[in-house]
Image 1 (cartoon, rainbow, N blue to C red):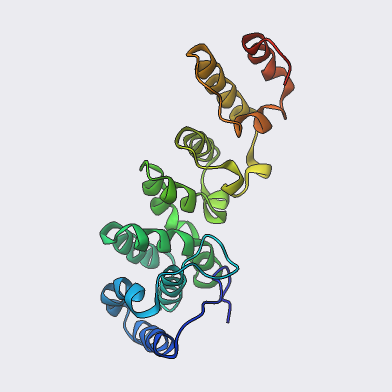
Image 2: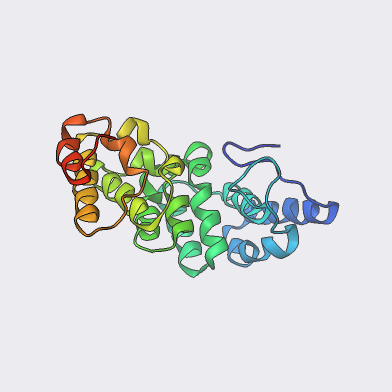
Length: 217
């Protein structure tokens, strides 16, 4: 069964029994999650989820454990941050990818924003991409969202993977992209192709860029 934004996962009978029992334990006692969360990969597997690129089986299993937590709001946010802070890369990705489902089903509210901010301070493209999902698009301030999008361009996260860009790409973001493109061109470096669609929404900002490249795009 699919839960909110969490995909259906193929599990062996043993894996399915483990996950169901683990979810029951978490529902009864949130404190059991600290031991169960890291164990999900061993118990359920780590292969990609068929037909749902971006998710692995262990991430989806961990998301279900998070959704079983009997917590909401700030308390839930604190639990998530503890798991994220002490987890390995796979566990951190699972927490970040679970945020939209936790907002929808568990009343997370703004309590997940510190997680997104922490992920955006890293240079791990996987974490940054996972952080820039629907939750970030709905909760980051305009300034924070613009800075996050620019960071994606810097570290090579494709903007096609960034949620909410069509809605939130404003004139200020385009100005920041124009400044970035000009700096790259003046340094003799290539401008990442993801910059151009944002700039093309604001043609007046392209004037000085056209002068630098000597041709119309």
